[in-house]
Length: 89
Image (cartoon, rainbow, N blue to C red; front, side, top):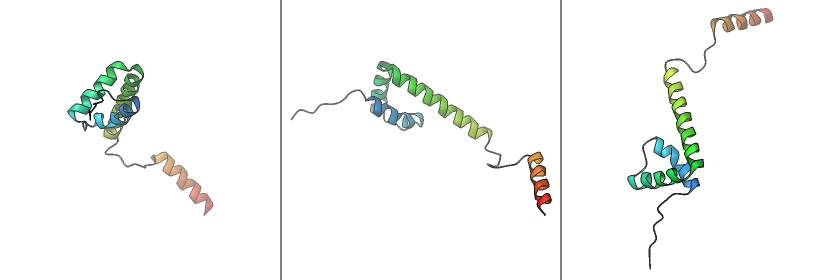
């Protein structure tokens, strides 16, 4: 029985492997297959470039907000809410 090896990935496989590639979790053989598809498929190139940009923006946002609490009201908003609470009392 002859074994056949698929060299390139499908578009669906490339989109699924994009996050693994971004995290550096693709094997060498998978990286080569990924690259072969990437150079031959303009829609996947566009998707991957957009995916990289979104990932970069998310990382920079997380770094910029790492020392701030997730939910924090400005002093003005706190004062406004306290005024409304006082009116109800």
